[in-house]
Amino acid sequence: MFGLTGAHRDYTWGSATAIPQFLGIPPTSEPLAEVWFGAHASGPAVMDGTGVDLGAFIAADPGAALGSRVRQRFGDDLPFLLKVLAPASPLSMQVHPSLSQAREGYARARRGGPGAPVDYVDDNHKPELLYPLTEFLALCGLRRSGQARDILAGLTHPVVGAARRALAREGPEGLREAFGILVQNLTSRAVEAVTEEVAARRRRGASPDAQADDIALDLARSFPGDPGVVASLLLVPHILEPGEAMFIPPGVVHLYLSGMGVEIMANSDNVLRAGLTSKNVDVPELLRVLDVHRSPQSPRPRLDGPGVTALPAPVEDFELAVVDPDGGEVRVATGGPRILLALEHGVRVRPEHPDPRGPREATLSRGGAVFVSDGEGALRVSGGKALHAGACLAHDRPGAGAATGAGGATGVGEATGTGEAAGPGASPAPPDVTPVGRSRPGRAAPDGTPRPRAR
Image 1 (cartoon, rainbow, N blue to C red):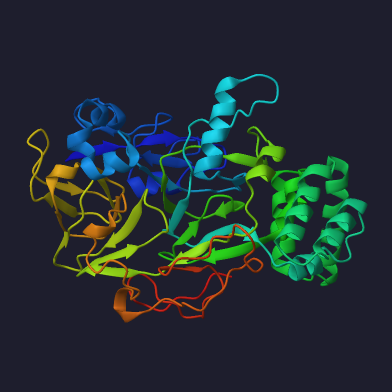
Image 2: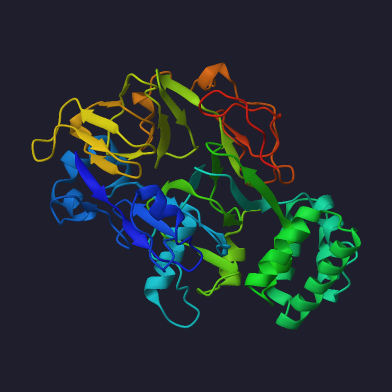
């Protein structure tokens, strides 16, 4: 076990104070958007006291660090990346590729030449799970066709009219066409004209969806003339309470607006952007990987033992669990490589078979993290709440496949997605996740208390 110092990312959309306050470090005048705890080459964490980055540590002895099962499935790389992020202004409107799309896109990027994509930096997919630490506002997934058509009603620009006509084709493909029309065909002047119409109907109290209009107007102040301002009207808003996790499959368009949270994802940094950014925008490539049949999903909490609540996602690359000793000591009995991130001060952690090169136990302040190798066995955690990140070794899980969450709460198996009915190639939610925003109100949080649904 070794302490980790995460890699800082100073993207312009980040808060200058939220993450420093969480980590207990002095803020600077610069934004601190993300801190990465992982081994991705774009920003590996560093092992405390060694000066060695986590990727190099794993590469020196992948068998010991990762274990045979993870190596058989994922090779010699840590399969997940854990981040703390704090947007103070909007991120880009973005989509992440599937595994096959990432491999094909990365191959095209490496070949180079005219038209080669530049946003594939590795050959991995990037499904994500967001665990909010504060109230978190996001746009994620496309609305139903009828709702989207109603929101665009009364906006007179011809490009918006073409999008409304596309939405008359009920179903996912009409949504795809309408979204593509808006992000590809609106000039800066056209966006400004539509923005003024949105502002005017908001002033009159005539908005078909006041929240959607307010978000679009906020985006216009940050990115005037950007087609993503108008395209945002087609996306579903989600207001997530602390602990209300959301899984974002590959291909789902999304945009984070504000809040602070922890993300776990496959070990990738592939991001395709449609707009609302100063970074590279590649609309044709984004539309190529956009999956209008999929929606964000809400994990159904699964009790893996006293004080350990897993938030399962339908991927093998990662699984996140909330560890809450509640004044006692909790045993976290999973294998493979793991990262434990403290959410409170005074979290004490000790592996049952500690690596002799590292400490036998550690006490973490809030935001502190440790990496634990496969051979170090189960973890004993006490003193405070933490997040436990690892690969999804299903046969190691107590009660694997159970649908009952913490506090006896059960997921909503009959819920349907926020998008249209599934079509060819659709990927329905597996038994331990439900689509966000369509389950019944009062869904339980990871600590068992009722919480409002995303909206």
